[in-house]
Length: 242
Length: 218
Image 1 (tube, rainbow over the protein chains, first blue to last red):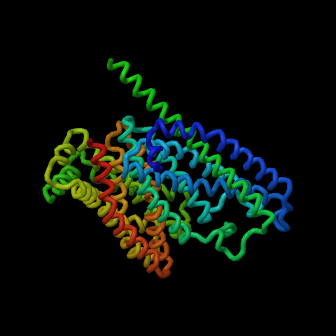
Image 2: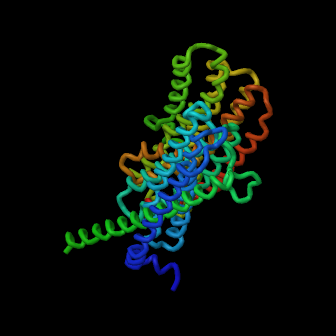
Image 3: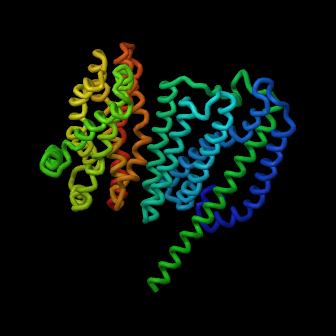
């Protein structure tokens, strides 16, 4: 019994079919609980008022935008090294979700920034590197769509993902160097001395858990769809040949 | 290897090779900018390093699809792939040829265009140095993009989408060197970063480009 067992598409589908309802329900519960808790049962911030509550969408979305890319990176590496098709398809399935999370992060950030900083957009390092991350997502998705042959597309996109990761990291440090920003430093890291107060911290954790579960559920669902789409394609080809 | 390099250079210089297109594009972009932002020399002085860097970057981008697409169409690339030369060497030579025909002329012409944009005196040296250090990275990254899209019918637009985000760090540090140089500030830090990115890209990216090209020629 090893993890690689699930590289078999049939086993993957069987496993995810069993798990998917639980993950989806848990995601909905966490999201509803976290957001309701955050929106209605936490005090307003003494300086930012109630605008601070967009935090419960902004932070988890931004977190998942980065983690989705990391997941794609891992899946791409697995495809390059072990050539499991499920892995390549999972990377493909995760890209639009990651791109959406990036957009949510940027949009909620703009909505939050308007009353707080007095501007929708500033060329702040964090904002800028998120915009660049979004461009990387777009390029990755476009390359998947553009190439007809499935294995070629998987190979090329996985190499793009590796190279893109290096350059995304470089861009992150480059924009840091290029402009000192408005955005506050990380306020939720585990090692920081000054974090947000516990009243905000717990509902935010529930929201983050909800977003993680939502991401897992969506990736499972979309990977299943990709597997089935490819199977349909193979069946159609066989029928035409036979 | 030198035969391949000479062949690429000859093809680029002779009629229809596209040599000079990038230069003309660079010239036009630089001439158009004052029309867009107004003839105020103070403003032009301030934005000159950035404009020249962006112009050079776009001129580089414009000629990328000539690196591999033409050779792919007429089958040269398949022949090269069966040659004893490793694929890494082939893509490196291609990138070098692209740099000699596009990057190097851009570096040499940039100071002249700097005069048009009222670039301050100390900026010229640093502009040339930053472009000289940065354009090899642009060529190598561009070759990677060209290799990714070589099999596609209309890969040009997709290639821009793939290559432009990869250009971000080079552009930031390159333009920063030129800007600080023009303002008479210390340039060491961005210069070292630019050199690091450029040498790193030249050393490592050919492996990625070669891997991608092998997949595309499969």
